[in-house]
Amino acid sequence: MTTLKVTEPTAYSRILGIGGVRGERVVTNDDIAGPINSSDEWIQQRTGIVTRRRAAADVSLLDMCEQAGRQAIEASGVDPAEIDVVILGTITHMEQTPSAAAIVADRLGLTPAAAYDISAACAGYCYGIGQADALVRAGTAQNVLVIGAERMSDVIDPTDRTISFLLGDGAGAAVVGASDTPGIGPTIWGSDGSLAHLIKQTHSWLTFRDGTDTTWPTLRQEGPTVYKWATFQMAPVALRAIEAAGLQPEDIDVFIPHQANMRIIDQMVKLLHLRDDVIVARDIAETGNTSAASIPLATERLLRENQATGGQIALQIGFGAGVAYAAQVVVLPNKTHTV
Ligand SMILES: CC(C)(COP(=O)(O)OP(=O)(O)OC[C@H]1O[C@@H](n2cnc3c(N)ncnc32)[C@H](O)[C@@H]1OP(=O)(O)O)[C@@H](O)C(=O)NCCC(=O)NCCS
Image (cartoon, rainbow, N blue to C red):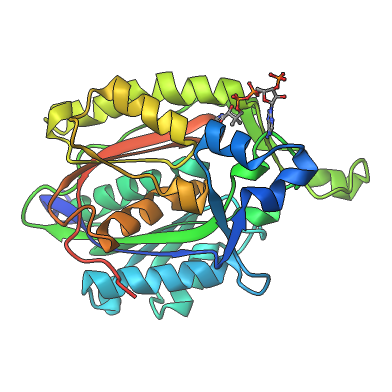
């Protein structure tokens, strides 16, 4: 009887390096408050956002992905020839095909790496880390470049009060490869399409073809419902990720939730009973909500500013449109890009 050969599994994977780039324009609350009849005070109180970073007109999503990806590869010390998969989480690549991942892989000199985009909104990066971990441990990939990137400016309606004022642009990236010790815990992930209406595009691209609505589609959300879902439904998911990694909440050194709203972050810290001295990512104050980019960007900042160090145990959780979510416990990498 003929027996197939299968890939040789590897015991463990870990994040080897992180990179990140924020949009270069610093947009204040006062800059955007007028068209939504809001104020710096209201936005700071309800969201914790002081500024959000948005890309310059001539900087594309692909440009930011390329820069963040290059930084992560440099920080990881991995030979680019040994990166064989690129996974890109984004909802703002404005061409249905080809994938942004394939173009970014080529720009980074990673061809013929396998490359694909995933559409899991603010959970995109954690979905990608979960897949990278599985691919490396299964022996399907040697090293995986995971990118979370958004140019949310392209889906913003400046007169929309529900979500646009939260949003920023950026790209964060991580290289995942084999490890001698466990570095990425089990991914707890899921979705619930019955709640798809909570955060969504205003209308389909098909309305352009049939002429029923030729205005540019933008994002909308049901803010208060999303707030409750994120706070109360996502804390148990985070706890399951801690348990699946064989840990207790007090073992977590660093908490890196999706940077959706500072109040959601604060509520989750309380609900999870994390240690008093846990380091909490609060990049949202300066960067805003960059959807799939927010977790790697927040990680990059913590490492760059020496608030967190390599080897610490971090809990990360992404959640958003879909509704989709993913959480895992990871060991932070030693190095980050420092320029
Ligand atoms: C969007 C969000 C900041 C709104 O805050 P909120 O406290 O829930 O606000 P509400 O919608 O309940 O409205 C409260 C009041 O503020 C007003 N308001 C709503 N949006 C406003 C805005 N952008 N600026 C100023 N006032 C606003 C409302 O009109 C209402 O006024 P009223 O009390 O006189 O009727 C909040 O719901 C939120 O952050 N939700 C989670 C969103 C999120 O994280 N999404 C991303 C997930 S990936």
